[in-house]
Length: 309
Image 1 (tube, rainbow, N blue to C red):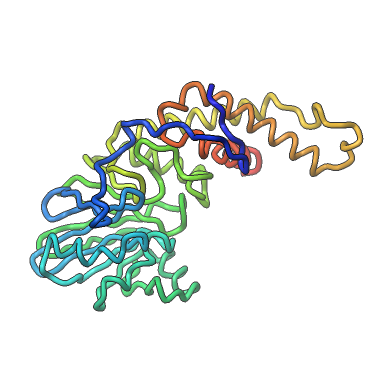
Image 2: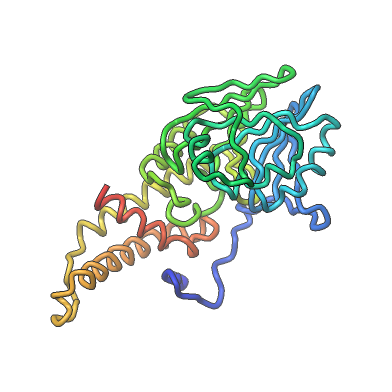
């Protein structure tokens, strides 16, 4: 098993990114890549963040505006349409996905779930304009014969994070929930509800779509990618549960520290996490890109979820 650095410890080199996790390269002169998803729908990405564009006869709908490449969005839009941006859809409230909206110019209609609208009103961030349309459970946007179905499936990554479906193109976009070919970002992508996020990944696996857009990484996803993440999450939950059941607090702690409950408990949690990491590494270290970068975070998060939630 290769060296896997605990949080805060750096090693000489991380594991190589598997070829299967990589996507087509981005032209450095452009700073973005367009991928045709069919019938006027495109993914635009810098191979770190992803958004979507839907072109129709009178305009363009933009789904998310990541600041990492938002300055390139007007250029990308010109590649697919000469029409103005008429609508913006927010996947959720996080600034790293919608903080570039002003780069689009104009006054498009902004659509989001109610929780997202509430958070943006609270935060009063000029980089994240407040939605003009807020929905509770479902909203269908129909423009020029093109359809986007927006739906809210409860708390997972963040309250207000929605599913965005293009039914004709058989494309599903759910941001910060599935990471095709990759280990999810640290601590289940900082999910506010870990078990809720896991349930949503399983829900995505059972839905009818052909292409998945997750908001991150180098490529779009397949059902096989989603099934792989479901399997990893099941193994992670099992490994953390077994470690919790077989680890006793206080074992190996210096007798002089036994009256320090913080030290005793920190030692206990660390040993649970070490066992979790060691259980998962042989099977998963070569299957998920950046396994070694965030596996400690995932085991810490699952340990806490199972123990106190």
